[in-house]
Image (cartoon, rainbow, N blue to C red):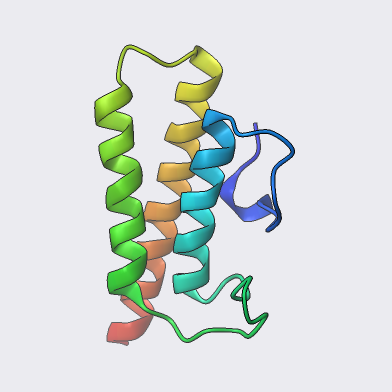
Length: 97
């Protein structure tokens, strides 16, 4: 299992469910300011609203695919969502401090 923190930006060799999840997680990471924007390679400013939208898309994906995923896919998605949510809360607390 690859946690969110170790996601590398790049094109996957095959389009898989996990690769799709990684692409959405990378979008959140860019908006968190944790990963440079792949198109410009610049460190973006934090945009919690946009990061939240990426997390919401993954949540919808989780809901709509319930019962149709392998155990590995289900675990991967759950782990990615957990880590993104934790990061979101961390940044939200930092912005209020």
